[in-house]
Length: 277
Image (tube, rainbow, N blue to C red; front, side):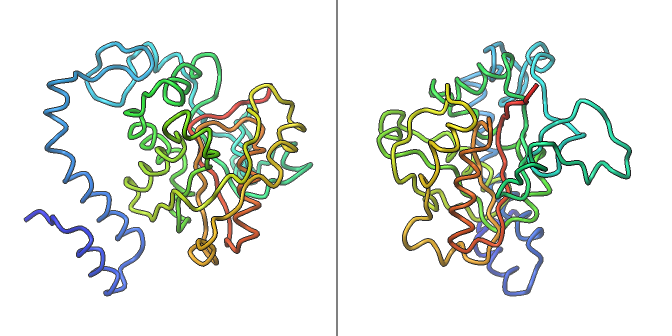
């Protein structure tokens, strides 16, 4: 018989000392069981379309063949710290130890970062429509991709939280795309999500046209752990979620704030990242 009380089942497993992966699996299965009956009805009324170009596709939350071919997914080999993909394939014995020049010169405050897509001309419309054009229905599919790309990070983390927006920008945009990704990833993984863990203390100018150095100065000290959330973070490993990582200045500023508040460590998962040429 299907368990329709996932919280009760999870509490029972917690009491019996079940492993965290086992408890996470129960959470994922319960969430999917509760939403599956609605999927067929939604597909009947609103046929699934490609997330990028809008063509009809067989499954919701997918790309058509043409768009799948166009976009570039981040694959190994890559930097073990920031997740930057390398153009050459190192020797297998050295693959896990590979570090890019930027991380060697200035190690980031987070331990690891992983991304799904290269942020380029092909993926930009996909990301920007989600970020600015109310294509929020894509969050579940993107979270599924992120779960695959950052599976090792998710297995090691205790808590998932998004990069926050300043309240004025949130009011204008009506939603925080990073929070939608973090929520969907929390539901898929069964891990605790805390959308209000971090707060953006000042309204920083857009990072879009700034140099790497100006990006770092722009967000320096802009983030903090929200009052009353420090104890929930202390001694726990945080997975920080954002939509796009360019220079890493924003996620680095968030990671510093989390570590200063007592986090045991910080990893980063993003939908797309810029790749330095």
